Length: 90
Image (cartoon, rainbow, N blue to C red; front, side, top):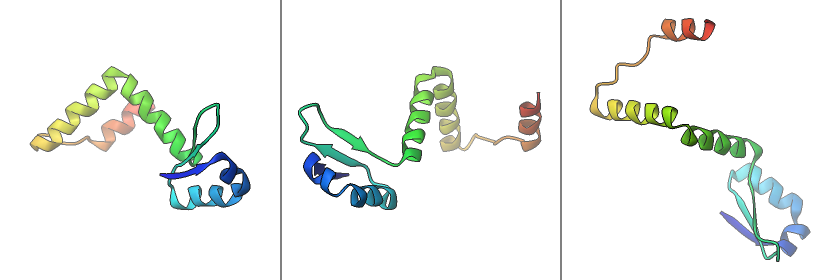
């Protein structure tokens, strides 16, 4: 994670913005009396929000954990894409 102080961030905003986007590395801006902030690409933020929603949904999380265990055990047989397509058309 890139770390900088508020004064440095203000002085070099466009450079930090470009670096965060190009390197896909979050930037911690510290030194404000109001607290620190993290700057990251918007699509990374959206992925984090999706992950949080999955982790909050116990049924989805349990399903993922069960599938993962089945893959590790070699008992996961996969899905028939035709069944999946039919399921999305209902």
